[in-house]
Length: 114
Ligand SMILES: [Zn+2]
Figure 1 (tube, rainbow, N blue to C red):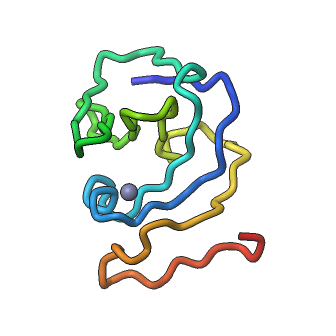
Figure 2 (cartoon, rainbow, N blue to C red):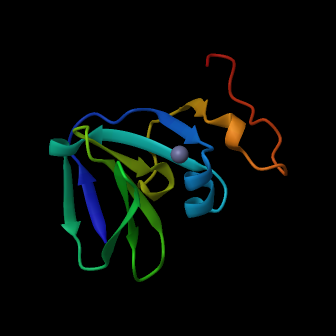
């Protein structure tokens, strides 16, 4: 499974919603790009799972890696930041759905420029 982003990618957002928590095992740290600036280079092991009525999630069905979150109604695709080759040049800028985090979590600390 390989992909390439040819355009701009957003800084990283951590999602703590229960679906992202369970699919990632912790929280989902994702960047995002426009769908037409995203290209699958090798797709043989890519699997899709319809995770809700409004989006599907992509994963590698060989190694289990959690890769994408693709909403039906937007022209964007979210990409797990850890699957990008470093250096990414990205920063973590926001946490969302903190109210859904599990009870073992401390509130994540972000840099002061958030
Ligand atoms: Zn989420």
